[in-house]
Length: 338
Image 1 (cartoon, rainbow, N blue to C red):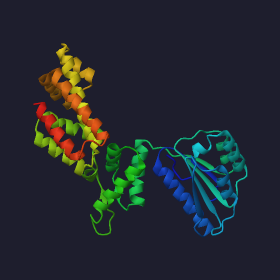
Image 2: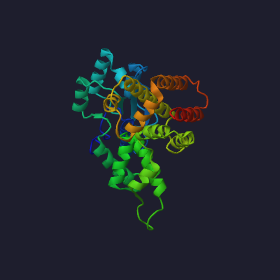
Image 3: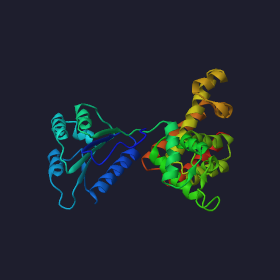
Image 4: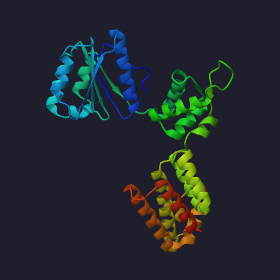
């Protein structure tokens, strides 16, 4: 990830590309602020969709003097589709050779094909900036700086690592969680001191990873307590805000494992071979094998089919009140394995 933002008010053509939406938005915002500051007034902004906009309309806007502001910012989203046609790419190359002094053109896109246009932009004092998610170490360092500079909180290094471990490196999601954590610790500590976010606070308030959440409901089902499963589903949906589709995926995944294990064991495969084939690991291994043997291949196959049907109905909007449906289904699932 770039150490500093390379954009400034002198640039007349800028390309921002990549899948990190936070950086795509943030870098444009910083460029617009720099243009505003240099102009001494808000610049006039015009947005176009590269998938449908006419190139002639974009070029006319770039070359026409603004009536209400001294400088104009022209933003083209999905710009890769605008440049996909060779004739339009050539026309934009010609524009980039001699861009209008009173306008700044920003092309944004998730995907981008480097080429001669990029070379011209850079040669003429513009910039081509890749906006991809950082690696885990850079994301954790970014979180610490973001917490201090934007959210007025001290995010401790272990807490930053825990945050990235739970959420991944998507900066938009990380920033949202940091804001929540900073709000939670606001006012704590000595008067006048910066509130601290430690790993314990992250553990309490930040949702678990997809794998952890999936194992939680699977573990509850394998314990065979319908009431415990209902409580766990409610906790995951209402407290951890786990998506309902994740819970259904977890049930389908468990039923598939039970079916595969039951079928292989019925064919005489030893348990250690079955666990490797089905890819069972850790604490999940023993209870899954035990329940698969108890169910047998026929009952396990019916259970798998019912889970797949629930998944189908949920995606078609035919599952009713989905959280309640999942609660009831998971309770029956738990009861059936015992």
